[in-house]
Image 1: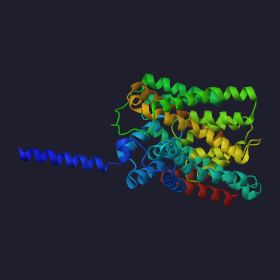
Image 2 (image 1 turned 60 degrees about the vertical axis):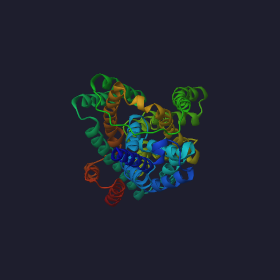
Image 3 (image 1 turned 90 degrees about the vertical axis):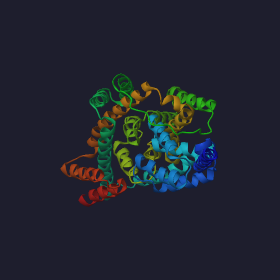
Length: 421
């Protein structure tokens, strides 16, 4: 009896020690840090996180799960699953949620600001300097950045197609979405393709087995989360009406970037066709400048959504400059952050719905078709002039497929374009 009691006692002590060894935030779901601590951690990440959203998630895991132990592996994996389920920039949404976990609402804002501002400031600086690129060398540099966009988007289409369209059903959804976007065009065609993917997914895509959940509470009550969801939907409905009623350019800009941020499924590159449909046909920015900025965005660390800051600063009419950059940057990120804050308390219920999982698979397949359409027009049609351009872009794509860092490919392609010119 004493041996059994001793074993039970040792098991209890071992369990208590194991529980204490887990990150406190993963056990209790309440903030255990400060916004300043969060800002410092994410500023480091914002200055060094090259390579796109998948790489960003790896940086987050190394720094915040392995080294700092803000949460455990199951909690982190489930948080990543949530942010991939929702529209918006997944890596920024994960960072925002980690800031919430560590430092509460101010911690969430600190994480977003520190991770976003380095690349946003670099792209705004490029926007101010791009006007001076009028000589032969400057034009060659712009052409090089446009060829960068060809290689980057082709690489994104290839990678997304391999992971998001692994079977015939999802390949057909992607092809149907590509055809719809090509025929209808504009924001209406893109929104229709996303909705088509969701409906088709619910019909033909069977959800896979769900991973075990590890997400604890994040200090967000259901009332707060519902308010965030109402705010997300309310802005999506009200902003277009306000823009039409007032004719105000600032409201129209906020509406365009907010809608683009609200409809992005499948990664940061998908924001390219959505933003292009909003800002180029309306003559807010030229197609050439748009692609040059997109190419430059590949050379800076942090989230690709900061491309919006370049666009806001480059507008042909006010508000532009610093004010335009701030409007575009906040508007494109806001819907994704509202959705994360709104969904966190409901994720355990949402993730178990087979219909939601199937719709997500169909939507992800549709965005492959949407991005493939953008690869041809405007990316290819605007950048490729002759066989030399084809060769440069092809070499850049091959380098990406072989694992070369995106920022190094950017410098290689632009250097080649300048030298050949």
